[in-house]
Image (cartoon, rainbow over all chains, first blue to last red; front, side, top):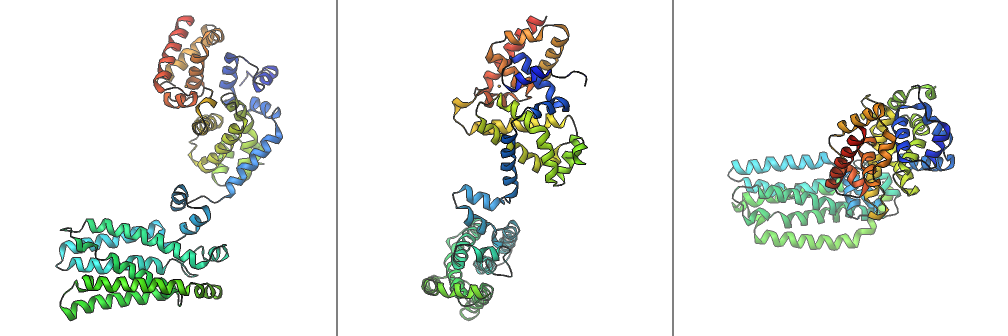
Length: 272
Length: 174
């Protein structure tokens, strides 16, 4: 490039003391001329550029928010809670996709098999349970140590995550239930058992690890649901009025235990 | 030495996650970008914030530079759009400056003007409103819609003003 902006013109351009036509030609020239850009840099306010650069470095040092975390912050959840929730294994896309796949199979089975609805109802409460089993603990949580060090009770964290997991999985199952053939009120019969199982698992988690608590409850659930079918010859027995009442009672009892035992979870958390 | 490398080479180092390369790019480009932005936005705080947005975007999107055109022009394209985003978050009255789809033709006309006529005089005789639209469209390379956001006027107005500016310039350069 042989043409360059005259120093005097450049100084007037930087000072904003230039007419539009001349500014046009300077601005058309600068993007492609390293020499004239260098001349602008020499006349620039160094202190202001340094402080702007520090702002850039600060922003680059902050880890980027994932989609879950960003969404939560947009909804008004405080940043630190959003980060701990965002790290929940059961809120990852892979987990949600796995749930959706399992549900798709269950719905498919329900359309093909005689007792499809039964299998769907047995399966539905197991999904949030599995999510909670993997919600908190040294083996499964990438942010476990962060959670221990956070100025927040470990148990509160588990509860917050449990609520988030329950909400997302319930939404997924509800959508799947809409896809069931011959939509019927009984397709919602999993709601109360799901709540009972979730609360019971949280109550148990105050005594043992979430993994063991959820595992044993899942086993118990399948056993009871299977026994109901075998003994009473009625597959949907557990989901009838009696079953619903029992589940609601379990939920209420578990909630009481939960409140009562919250502190012991904290102490155990220190040891693991 | 990284300081001896061309902008394109430095940019590819940035794409590989080299923070020092970003600093080199910053030292080379932030000053003129800041001056140019300041001509389109009177608030120095917004200009500094836009510079930060631009370099954060360059850091994350350095791989998207295809090697076509000047790195300087590429960075200006990012900066002016970040400025529009920043201005959109501000009250309307703080905005200073507009767009057209067939900007190729306008550019050609202006280039023709440089060669055959008194372009400076023609630009000077344009009304400030028309000149702002020519600047945003021809010089800043914005679309009608982006220019409208920058200038705080509807897209349709940008198009009408660009048409009038083009007609006037054509008449005077003929």
